[in-house]
Image (cartoon, rainbow over all chains, first blue to last red; front, side, top):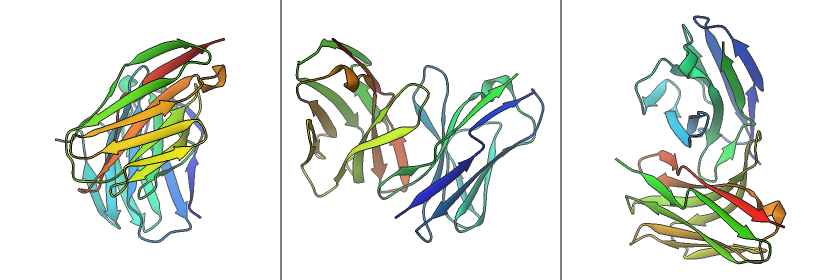
Length: 108
Length: 111
């Protein structure tokens, strides 16, 4: 069965600092992978999705970027965090959606 | 652009009532639709998954239906309990490899 590992679980970062959230998948090959963000009081917003190594599609213009260096690895990054980047970030695969446990990011 | 909408945004019912949550989507070209619950401060729990070829799925007191032609799904919860209180999310996997969530319905079941 599929398992998604996402870390860290919580993160507090100062404004202007870089960010790297990592997601790895086990139990499947060539998955479609997704990054979502849930800002306070709002729904889950699709940020990026990837259908394969090096293939990234962005849904919304933003301060973040994503990369997929390996088949089962999906990374969410930022060079300089903004206060508005605070939120709950989820990595997921599809078919039958599996989610990581999420990362609660607070930018201070 | 594909969109997923859920109504109502919030719902409060007394314990024991049956209730229906609604989800609508703008494009009938989907792989599947999934209902989740999200408890405060926690991740998502998958409740029911309906494939594109199916009309409904049942699990215990939960029943989810899918009408692709009208772009609608409902989640029916029978004999609601206080432990059912949570935010319920509908998620649609469109055939363009995009997987969108609705904004959720916050359910409170009053003892």
